[in-house]
Amino acid sequence: MTIALIGGGVGGLMTALYLTQAGHEVTIYEKSKKLGGRLAFVQNGDYCIDEGPTIVLLPDMFLDLLKKAGVDTSGLRLLRCDPLYSMQFEDGEVYTKYADAIKQQQEIERLFPQDVDGFNQFLTEGKQRFDIGMSAFLTKSFSVKKDFWTFTSVRKLLALKPYQTVSGLMKGYFKDTRLQQAYALQSLYIGGNPYQVPAMYSLVSFSEHEHGVYYVQGGYASLIPLLEKTLRSRGVTIYFESEVESILSAEGRATGVRTQAGETLHEAVIFNGEMPFLKDLLPAVSKRTYIPSSSCYLMYLGVEGKYDQRPMHSYLMGPDFKGHMDAVFRSKQVPSEPSIYIFNPSVIDESLAPKGKSVLYILVPVPSGTDIQWDDVIDWRERLLDRLEANGYPDLRERTEWMEIRTPETAKSEGYFQGGNFGIAPMLGQSGVFRPQAKPTKFNNLYAVGASTHPGGGIPIVMQGAYLTAEAVLNDLSVKGGQLNERQASLPRV
Image (tube, rainbow, N blue to C red; front, side, top):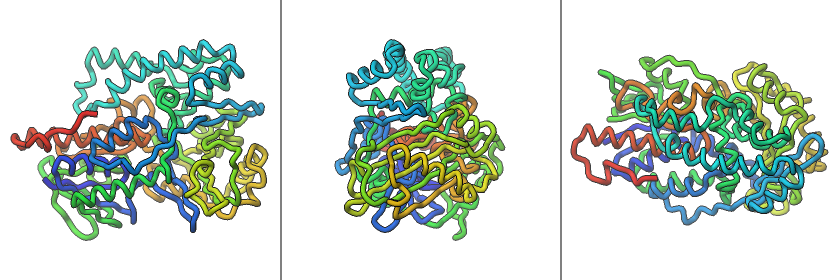
């Protein structure tokens, strides 16, 4: 069985690992010079920092999925972050999230004594919702829609309160607006508006407390060479700078791919890319319209010395968080005084910079799908640096030896839908059964995987999506071939 995989993002690589683990031949067609997609490094000399994802959530799931794919994880070192991160509000108050439950309770009592009971209720009900969400939705595919529309599934969906927004749900737990923000902003991890996305995405903020926040020693993107090494050991062919121009088809089946080098026939095709672009490769698929996720204004810095007094992860909240979200998701404008995320990995990882120096990663959520000329917002960028220097990062400009900036224009040029950094937006109409599935079309041997495919974004969740896609391929082969050995016909259960 020869399978074409279009795109070498982490979802595609994991799918290839599951399929080769089951004995199938996979050929990867990657349009760029490297694998990994969003999981990559930005480098300048001896400075190195993650380009995209920085926070490892669901660590047990992350490691388990790698092991199920036959990846040797003995060299991976996950470091638990404690504190998880800090949030500095406009009034100067700093709220810290801890891995230690007792410390967290004390922090809530110190700053928000009126919300202690609400926080405990959030944890109790979050656990109930998480267990439902994991078993009923995250680990299941809905390529056959009737598998979802059952009494049991709908009842479980309603338990996740999809009719509420994440922000609305948090208002039911917390009286203080700052705490509401602290437990709603996590939907931005997957490019969603806390004031719009359904409450089931509150599972992200609950998971931080339940499962912790982790860091991969050496950077999250150090996972990619490990995956590539494992694939090559299994004989996988990888073509770099080999953009697929179209998917070949005949009689309702995908038959192969066409690149600049010519046509190659395959028995199945897996699309690992932005789902809105699938129709460009195969015009016969649905012309469904999609809403993009938010984008990011990203600054990568190499600096003299270290900011050892600052945590690895922190947020500098703006004076009007809702106004920031409205600018990103509604009016599509440059946010005037936005909230800022700062990643400071050198406090625990000295391998990312020359001795005595460090790296920083600055992220501001900004709108996608606009004609804003981001190279012209110099004054705005300088105001961001002013705020950082005044709030824990003194002399940042003077100490900066290297700076690289990536904008929505950068993301769009690299093939991200309308410059969104997280695939399609996690809105109700683009979530669960309404999101593109492992089998996204009527072509019965065309599959999909990635952040725009169910169950959605975030590296462990994309990896879970890869498991579902591989499972769909193997199930179809079992039906078609009639006789497949146990290794071919199934995957170890997650």
